[in-house]
Image 1: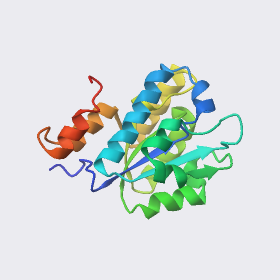
Image 2: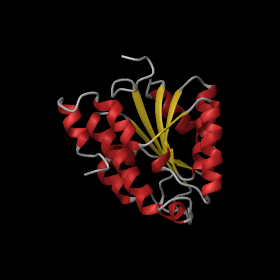
Image 3: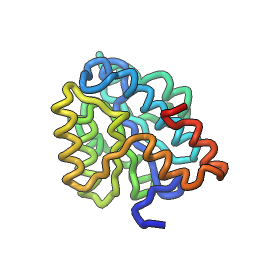
Length: 191
């Protein structure tokens, strides 16, 4: 197996600020599709046993709570969500940084709202700290398509791999005939 392949045993997932209010501010992509893909990422993690850290920024303000599907699919991660008081780079928040380090995994799958702010800066820091990062672009969005594209390019130039949730499903499944492959095939976009 290629050394860069992410598996349920070596990867962790970080979902950043998929909050009701924050998502309503984005216009780079169909927000219903972005939400559906974020939910699929949660289902992928739950179905394959990948540990997840959820974080929110100022959830008691206009940004609002996380989308309710995350609480339903990942109740334990939801209860342990890291509540940031407005710190832009989640990795600058001690609780979030400690939670990421506490996972003990160097391969991170990241998605969030917004791509150009709340995903970009922690991903750049994660790369600087030696993590391998895959950014699920289809479960992330920004205020503008322009800002989203530039953020994805900047992360890719820094060493992140830009993916879709379907690419992640296929990478984790390896073989559709296995129990994990069968479970994950039910999450594919075509279903």
